Amino acid sequence: MKVRLDHRMLCLVSAVIASLASAPFGRAQSSAPAGAGQATPTPTLAAGAPLLGGQFLNPMNLPGDFAVMLQQKFGGRMTSAANASVSLAGTITDANGSRAAQITVQAPGVFRYQETGNGRTLTFNGSQFGTANGQGGTGDQRVQESLLGDFPDMLLFQLAGAGARKLGSGFRTDNGKTPNYTGPFWTVYTFSPSARPGLTQGQPLQQQLMIAIDQATGLLAEVRSVTNQQVVQTQFKNWFQQGGQWFPGLIVRLENGQQVLSFQAQQGGGGVGAQNPASSFQP
Image (cartoon, rainbow, N blue to C red):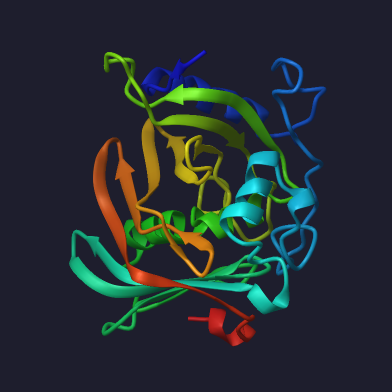
């Protein structure tokens, strides 16, 4: 059965997520059909600790579709010290124009975003965000959410060992308006992160999310949140392969359907390497 994923469905799912946010997901709380809810205990994390119960990603700690993505699409990156860092260079475009920029995500769930020329830098060191020459306010939060928190590898670190629920497969994206619709079709999960000292609920890394996987490619298609009637979508498009691993070629952020930010990766801009020193994730 194919299911439409429209605005009413988004609001309904958002309400369900909010009602479950105060408790870890588990079969006892689930009203989904048998096998539809997939959850693992939510770990208690101290400030500065990894975003999961270990230094590197382990497929055994991920929901099935994401474990397959890690192993078959990402080549097992972030699973050891030898492949613990991912960088993507490209061009960011927003209301202030276009600039060269680079995204770096590293185990155990830290990241750095830096623009070339103006020195703008946004970081997360495992317990707090940092900034240098930032725009402040909404401008910085958009980058923290869509280019860092929602970045595929960072998303896996949030999901590992935490509570995620599979809503099902066969979701369609056209609001039911396309005759003879042929795709894309999505597998959709909901995710409510565990509370983390130093971070605020509803802000980056503490948001209740809907996560969509393209069934044809097995790759991340979109991350959505609904807050105060605002639908925020981070879309991942034009995936390209390099060194046997897949990277998003285009990341787009929409707010209530309007594009406010994009990151265009350079062809061959993805790179995987060993761990960088902790000082790399300070502004």
